[in-house]
Amino acid sequence: MKIALIGYGKMGKEIEKIALDRGHEIVSRIDISTNDTFEDAAFKTADAAIEFTRPEAAYNNYVKCFEHNIPVVSGTTGWLEKLEDVKKRCTNDGQTFFYASNFSLGVNIFFEINRQLAVLMNKVADYNVVMEEVHHTQKLDAPSGTAITLAEGILENLDRKNAWALETAEKSEELVIKAVRRGEVPGIHTITYESEVDEITIHHSAKSRKGFALGAVLAAEFAGKNKGFLSMHDLLNL
Image (tube, rainbow, N blue to C red; front, side):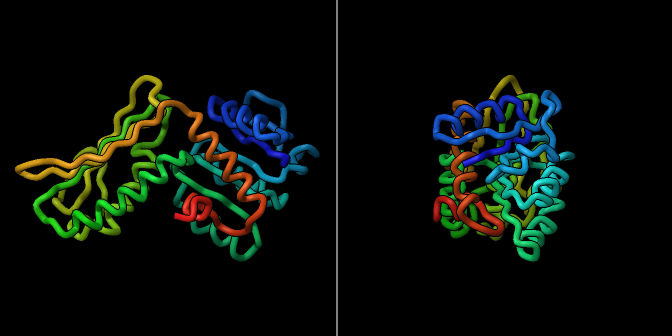
């Protein structure tokens, strides 16, 4: 298939390598470091666009793709106040949008483990739960989109928590998310349930960006064959 890359930083370059290895063609690379644009004839030939940019640019990038009826795969986080509008464009205008806060296959399995653990811990009131996420210093949003997805999985299934809070909680009903930024860490997420007598911890640590990039290319392949608002839940049939 023909793929357009929107964002050609470290992630974009990793996606390019995997896409080429899987036999795809990169027809456009839109970034401040390139001369390609949304109006180029090559971009308009794309079967899908993969977008990893900045929160403030993401929504406008999606709209530009939709103007040319190009399915979008996005891993940019921090823009979700516009999510309902994107969903409406899929429902009302026949657009295709695949969003994931994290494209790693392992992380999406971790999401499911997190939800199931919350269901079990809902039956045991003696445990408090906290989360820590660690990312590289270039990551702009905090907490990470992955951490927010994990938090939502807990809040939906653990009655004693009804909201998440960054760093500190004002109420016992809030789930604390500690966000750490250091070095070149691709992503570490740890969830801990602790009581007076013991603790239970689940942990996912990414070794490189390769897992995220592979998932994004798989998502593009899926978006090229399916319509509407899509997610890793659809791709993996979890």
